[in-house]
Amino acid sequence: MKRLRLAIVGFGRVGKACAQVMTGSEDVVLVGIVRRPEQVAEKLPPPFSAIPRAAHIGELPEVDAALVCVPVNLAQDTSQSFLSRRIPIVECAILHGEAFQQHHAEIHRVAFHHKVAAIVGAGWDPGALSMLRCLFGLLIPKGHTETSRRPGLSLHHTLAVQSIPGVKDALSTELPIADGKVQRYVYVELASGVDYDEVVQAIRSDPQFLDVETLVFSVDSIASLEDEGHGVVLERRAASGQTGHARFLLEGRFDESFLTAQIMLAAARALPGCKPGALSLLELPLAALWGELAAGIENEYL
Image (cartoon, rainbow, N blue to C red; front, side, top):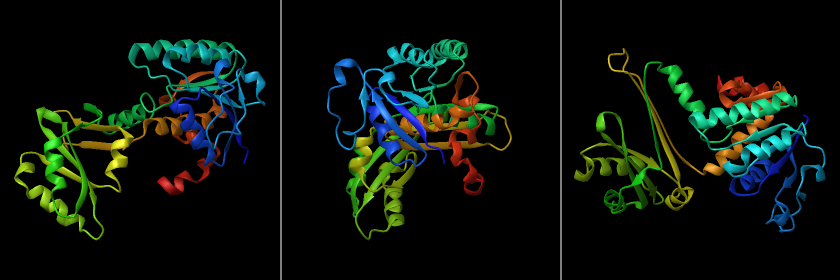
């Protein structure tokens, strides 16, 4: 298997996450990190201290692509500077709507002119969340999608769950769903040997939880869950009058930087098969995001 030689441009949270993700990937190698001239001399923390650093991509060994991990206001100029050197790029600027369309068009213009490939909006949102919204739309063509981010903490209900025997720690959130109704999500960290079903029954039978639908999830660590700091609930409901009353719900908590890094790495795997110009994730075949690892995905996921 030929390993993709990648450079990281910028070493903030996303750049560091990309470096960490690459250390565990068998099909890519991190050639070096491009930083601002005043930051090049700064020593990187382990395990990145031995990775080559440069103020200019020309100071690094030959690369197959660059992962552009810079602030959104620098993303276009930085991407264009690499494209002008005919270096394919993946970028993750957080832009939406018309701003994203204009950004995409300008990156495409430069990439096409220099006969090189680029993938734009390859992060969490836009990016992975866009793909999930699109899939839900395919499953329910006529309907409504709601996206709720960073569900709010309900302190009163959190304390109620924490008082239940066998619960070491808890976190309760409330989320608006269709028709103005509320749905409650409860995360519990259980003591050793405690029966999950008994705890769920105790929560749902508590008078404080009888007013709305309550979903209970067991997690290894509430502290880790809170540290992650990001959450999303994506819901798609069929339009009124549609048969089947279809409804899809996706809920997750995660470190957004690491999800962005995973998507950027997947996009880099797709670059060798792309024609000159810029593409978003929605324009790529799903299998292309696996690169040379795609051979076994049908066996695992179909």
